Length: 445
Image 1: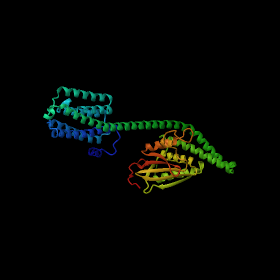
Image 2: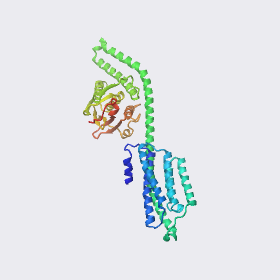
Image 3: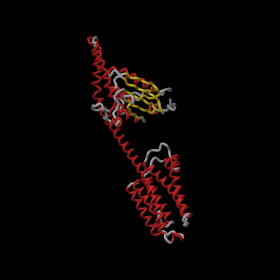
Image 4: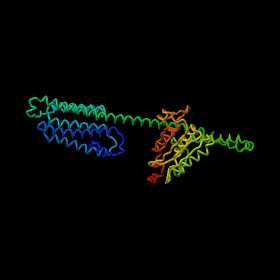
């Protein structure tokens, strides 16, 4: 429909998916349909049926509907939501206009009087219970007034003798019109409400996840205070043992001590990563760097500690391109990227791949492995806390933190199984979220 296309062009492309706003747009479309139908009906009644109509009040009502629609479209461009009161006023306006037109065309004897049912049904779907009853009462009062004070419409000779036949034909057209409008507009309205409920459910889920992160941060903070001192003591003792002359010649023991020292440092890093992902970075100083230097530092750190984890090969493919982009190194992002690599190492100890590229102003990182891949249930619940196939308590927290850290930065995380085997975790981070204030990121390689 040309009218629908015009409205879509007038509305901003990034309009929020608000049910009230879209329902008002449906009412505007319904008015355009009513304007076209009324003009056609007036012309058919005058030219084909030969019935004289009061054109001035009828055309004035049509012009009022056109004016209201034209004024409503710029309002929808500026407004982000539509209240229940505004939808109620819009429906009451439609009731008043229909009542005005029926008053001059036979009142309740007009076969199109049942069109009031359309406003009642839409009110029941779109409005609150009190507002819906207000619309229903308004239509009943209008019909009562039509039966008491409206003058009958004079009919020409062919219809004056048997007005019932004309009424029945008009009633058939009215029924078909109501059926079509209810099918089209009520179905679309119900879809809008369903999408709104789904959006609200997603907001509630994110609120619950944010609350979960806060509680994790509090628990991690307490654990850090409790574990900080013993971990530091262990690190000092292991360092002293490695420097003892009587142990220096024991190569096997030195390797074991090195592994123990790496494990202690790893425990410290895990505690810090949980704190940073929860928004409580432990005294981390802001570091200005670039995308390429940031990624190379992560790879170098992982490779330097790899001997304390597993003998896996980390293959880094840098496709970010030129120019490099200055950023502020985010400790939480560094940790969750490391966690994604660690998860891949657990299922693919021989090889893990890290690929970096730039797409649509985003840093895209892909961590690939040659493991068994994710099962379908894991892909469906990717990023939910404690959803894991590792079979141990607390599994899935790393992916949960990854998803939420990226989401807070305006990015996203996803996972897929590769056709050739293994799986890939994809991270998308907007470069603008990492850039220093005032830096231009318009160049996209």
